[in-house]
Image (cartoon, rainbow, N blue to C red; front, side, top):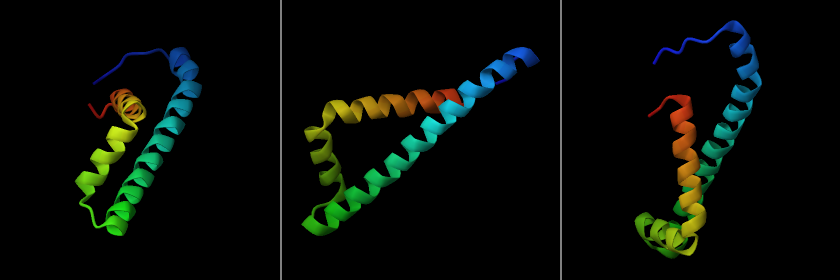
Length: 81
């Protein structure tokens, strides 16, 4: 996707871009941590990873849905979708 912006607009966007990328990086790191936790919990309990994920999703449904929404928004901003 090509976006036509002026150099002044690009300069103004620079700070926001840096901030958005920082948040994206934090969310990606959090997602990796969640994967590690799911794997460790599955190994410790003998449960399948899918069961552990489902349990976490049930226990923390609202928070996980909010995180998934943020990830989707950031991927959109990054241009992945």
